[in-house]
Every structure is written in C-alpha cells, then in structure tokens.
Amino acid sequence: MKRKIISKIYNYKPVKKLFSKLLFSLKNRPRLEPGIAEKKSEANLVISADFELGWAFRYSRKNNRPEEMADRARRNFPFLIKLFEEYNIKITWATVGHLFLRECKKGDHDWMHRIPFFTNKNWVFSKGDWFDCDPYSSIRDDKTWYAPDLIEKILNSRVEHEVGCHSFSHIDFSDKNCPRKVAEDEIKACIEVAKQWDINLKSFVFPGGTYGNYQTLKEFGFTNYRKILDYELMQPVIDENGLVIIPVSTGLGNNGLGWTKEYFFKRLKKYIDKAVENGTVCHFWFHPSIDEWFLHNVFPEILKYTSEKREEGKLRILTMTEIAKRVLKKNNKYQSSLHQQR
Image 1 (cartoon, one colour):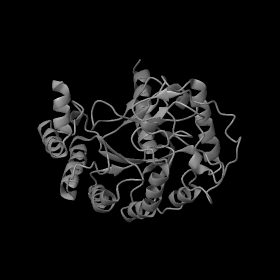
Image 2: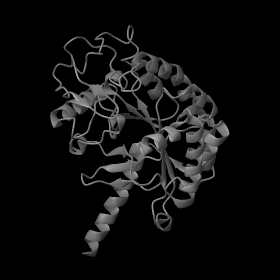
Image 3: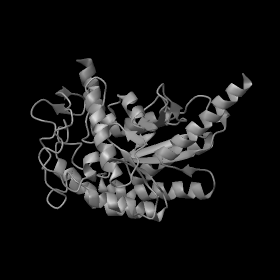
Image 4: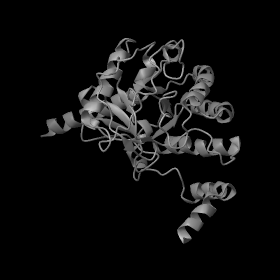
C-alpha cells in the first residue's frame, strides 16, 4: 500500500517534473564510465533512428495506432533530412526490412518462421498471425507498411547516411521469445531486400530493446549493435561474439513533463560536453515519429551545437558502422601487438 501511494505521488506530473530535474542534477548525470578520462580517447557522437513507421505499434500495450504514428513520421521526414543536411550530420537509420519493399502479395512471407505468441513490456501478441497487419499491397495504397520513397530520400541525401537493420517485421528479438529460426529468417529477409538497394547491412538495433540472438547477427555479417549498458557515456566494447556494442546515452523526444526547450537543450548539451571532456561516445537515438514541438524547437539546437563542436575539432560525428570499424581496427592492432610480444 505504501509503495502504491509513493508511486502515485511520484507519477503526479508536477512532482515527476521536479524530481526528474533534481535527480539528474544530484546524481551528476549522465553517468560516466569510471577511469575513462585517463584513457584519453577521442569524443564521438552517433545518432541512430528507429525507422519503423507502423510496424512497431500494431501489438503495442500503450500506443496501438500504427497509421497515426506512420503519418507523423512521414510528415517529419522531409524536415529531418533537410536538418541533417543543413548541419552536415550523418546518422544511422535502423530500418525495418519490410519498409524497403515497393509491394508484396499474399504468400510472399510464408517461407519465414513465425515468432510464437508472447507478452513483454512493449507488446501483447496472443492471437492470429504475426503478419496479419500486412496489407499485401503496395506503397501506392498503404504508406504505413512500405517506405521505398523515404529510403530514396535517405540515399539521395547530400549527407552520406548509413542504413542499418531493425529486423524485418519488428519482432521481439530476445532469446526468450524469438527462436533461432525466426531470427535467422528475419535477418535473411532484411539482407535480401537491402541488397536490391545495394545496401550492405552491418548495424543492428533491437526492436524495443529486446536483446538476443547475437550469434545470428554475427553469422550474417553484422559488426555492431546498439544497447543500454551500465553508463550513459563510455567507450564501445566488444562482446563474446566479436560484435561491437555501441552504448546508448539517451533518447531524443518530448517526455510530456512540460520541460522548456531551454531546459531540454541544457540537459542534452551536458551529454555532449561531458563526452568531449572525457573522450567517450555520446549516442542519441530517436523515432522519426518524434514529437513535432521537440523536432522543431530542440532538435535543431542540438545539431547546431554538435556541429560547432565538430568544427572546433573536439568531436567526431560518425555512424554506428564507422565507430565499429574503428573499434575493431584498434582491437586488431592490440591483439597483433600482444602476439608479437609473445
């Protein structure tokens, strides 16, 4: 009972707004990996986008409005592309594989193993077929489930963005809920359709943070993935499969707490400044369906600031794959050095 009362008090918006600011300040957030400053590494910024349109929302516990979210993402897309071009900032677009398609018909995905029924913190899938939402039509008739037009905008941009992978149909990718055969087929489908666009997928973002099936990613040629680790600011690490983990710093978007654009900027600026000061990776992520107020009022200020830091020579702005290449190259040199010493 006491815990429920405390929870209700905390979730009262004015209280939550106040405490969210106090905790950030009192806990000296963002959290910094211990000893990182002594390593004297360079500071890097990476931005990744979970590009999914309607696919993330069809079994959602909280937001089962796929068409609405897809429409919002589509409205935001031209502005996002223009914004990244204005500040010459390349990002990693973690793309749901089905969005590459211009069309599909009934039976096209029948070869794929289906994920069993499951319930997690994000979704409830308890009946029907995982592809029941698929209209089996085309971009002309169903812009919620196909996005070749938006992928063309990414590839035709003056900025050399990376296109990464977000699974084929936005499944729970965890070992608990996703059998190996399902993960393999999802990745196979993504690779096949990406090749038709001359895209070689190397970076992976787990749908809804459902981490797992790492060996599958390695077997199909991926080099890295995004994951929440112990600290918001740290250097990437290499996992037991030889994949580079690129740590998450924070998400970008409006949280509904009524923060001003000045406070949002102050808070996010601290991530960048601390990364520059201590030589870490700062990794921001967002959804293209991001709140329009945040997109137009806060996002440009953050990109402008990061661009200024880059021009000052204090910050590199890289894609996920570019960071992974640097980490793996450095590790290979280190291993080679150890071998020579022996």
